[in-house]
Image 1 (tube, protein in one colour):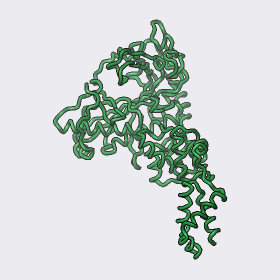
Image 2 (image 1 turned 180 degrees about the vertical axis):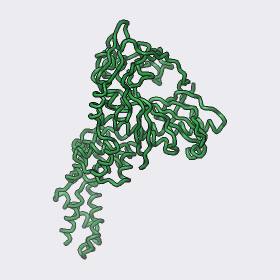
Image 3 (image 1 turned 90 degrees about the vertical axis):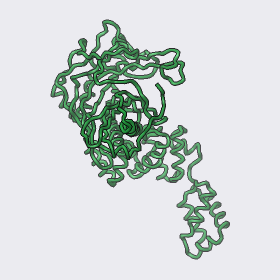
Image 4 (image 1 turned 180 degrees about the horizontal axis):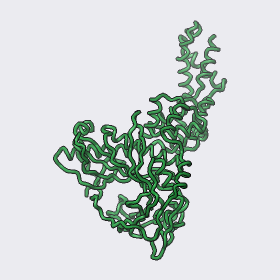
Length: 501
Ligand SMILES: [Zn+2]
């Protein structure tokens, strides 16, 4: 298996001439319950390896699992928020496979009786709404984590030995599976991205997971197939695993569309397989072949009682749901006074929640939007990370805007404060201190610089004396240059006019 050979790609526009894409998304959400799915171990990944384990999550003989009630509650709330039906009665199933990160040699999951089914989510892309149908959302447990030591790539090939950490084994997961998403055409990559972004926002609003994609709390697998344009059939699909940012979801869909099209148009056929996304090179490579009829020998879990949530409980949980996302967006737009275009761009950038939190921290709506969609969006593009994963908080952004409002820094210097915070130099105030960024509004220092500027530009000074006040800009520019941008421009203007009147 060659690891990173770039395959032939068809130009994106040509793909759309000849093919219709069908998308499917499987998203795993790691719940933030205190304990694991079937035992009392802490549901915390990380820390001392294999410290958070017990006979149940290690699959030792005779250990008996018990369902985590809080995880069932979270599953139902996710299902209700996705407009799903909630099963009156459902069971767990054993999904049998042999792999060292699953100590029981089966994963306790749900098979033909998911707790949530037949839902949908309306996704906004560029002002249009796409209804993504949810086939199911079911409960399962996470696996442990293998660590391959000695190789250069971190993969098992070339490693001297492997270690397994079972701290993560048994952490509750909800897997949310869409039906094929058809008819998105050229918007397919954007719809995939928007779906995952909106789903994350919903999960955050529900408070059931940390939902950090870069931490693996939320993991997306992207299914894609192409069919000849207008044929109405479904082509053979590939499944790209663990794509861990919104932008990567979009890029992976686009890449697979172009790759499939190149193969199909050359008379080839698509191999049904899992593929790996490579963030650095922006390509997918072959994983393992996978057939629909993969035999996991599912059977109902005999050690767990069925889950039968009462209708009263389901209705009680429905009462705890956050505001409907469509209603919420309309409310926020009205509160913030954003134009349709501003709102669309904010949603498209995955910045809705960030802007909302920044406003909650005291920033004006337009200022919050300006920073997240300007300076920070630029930075997230450059670094290839989602906005939400940048090392800066909404509170930091609000504080930097406050520093601008208080005239401690101007807009230009504020950009340097952002740079410092993103570089890990501390809080906005610490960055201003350490870098000496505060603007000078002290008349003594400014007055000297103003005098220098007047002396160096006598013709400009004469014009101002003659009443051509607009000429002051040239002197202000000279002062700013001398003060390396750190002068209070308003006060400089006042001083120039005072001295020359
Ligand atoms: Zn345990």
